Structure formats: structure tokens, C-alpha cells
Amino acid sequence: MSTPGWKVPAALVVALGVQTVGGLVWAGGAAARIAALEERVGEQRLVAERLARLEEQGIATRQTVERIERRLEAGR
Image 1: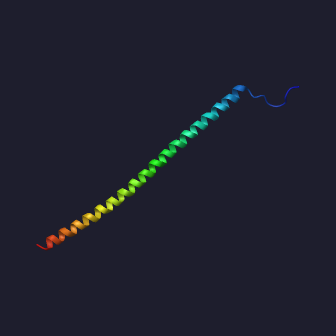
Image 2: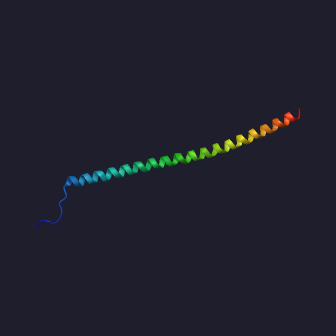
Image 3: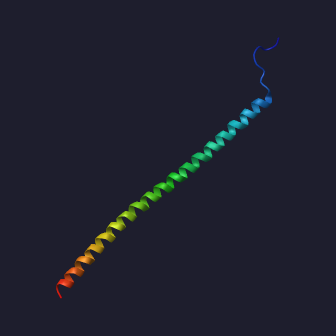
């Protein structure tokens, strides 16, 4: 007795297996790259926040120096 249904060539099964493994490897690599990029973005966000604080401190220092200079000039 023969088996009813489709006969799948071994080459087709092997090709699908290779493509599946390749797709999983690619997806794993993509996930790793995305994780690395997310980490870098997080680090850059922290640096940007520190830079903003430093800029505000610089503005406040400049205003203080200008106020001191005006007082010194007014006292002459």
C-alpha cells in the first residue's frame, strides 16, 4: 500500500530548515543590535540632562557676575 498525500522532496525540507535557522540567527543579531542602541540612547539621555544642568548653572553664574560688576561700577 502506498501512502496517500503529498511527497515532500528532502531538498525542500532542508532548504526550509536552513532558511528558518538563518532567520532565527538574523533575528537574534537584530535583537542584540537594538539592545545595544537602546543602551547608547539611554547613556546619551543622561549626558544631555547633565549638559542642560551645566548650561543653566553657567547662565546663573554669568548673571551673578554681571550683577556683581554692576554693583562694583555703581560704587565707584
